[in-house]
Image (cartoon, rainbow, N blue to C red; front, side):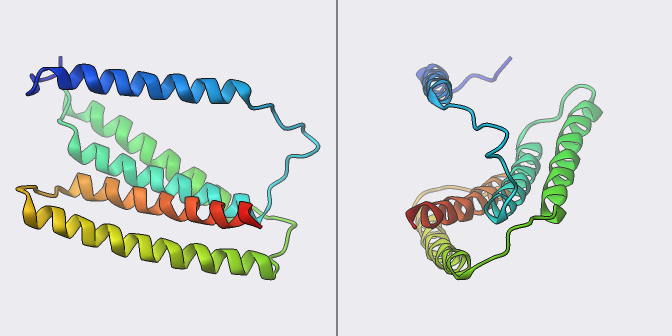
Length: 168
């Protein structure tokens, strides 16, 4: 049972938005055609994407573990959050050390440098925005919220790299 929220309509709004987002994602996923087995490979791009996504999800998991209240009994929450965290770290480490045949070229290094620079600028801008928000409004940052924010910034690098990788 969830605690009462003020105003009352906020639960319905969040439920509606999440439902619409899930419908959109499932609709887009149904339109995508699967890649044949011959075309699948593990290249440098995947070696960048997968570990950062798994490590960002691990950071999200820690943030969610800190933000959510304890269950009854308390060890159930720790078991599931810890298991998810361990699994995500294991998957991230696996894809970090997985071998690839592909070697980096000049374009790869340029895209990596562009993504890192853009990501740094966006991170500094978002931190300045967060500073302004916390100075103007009564808003307290909790460790869990900061960990979720850090996970979002890790995913920002993937998005920046994807933009430059697909742009060429």
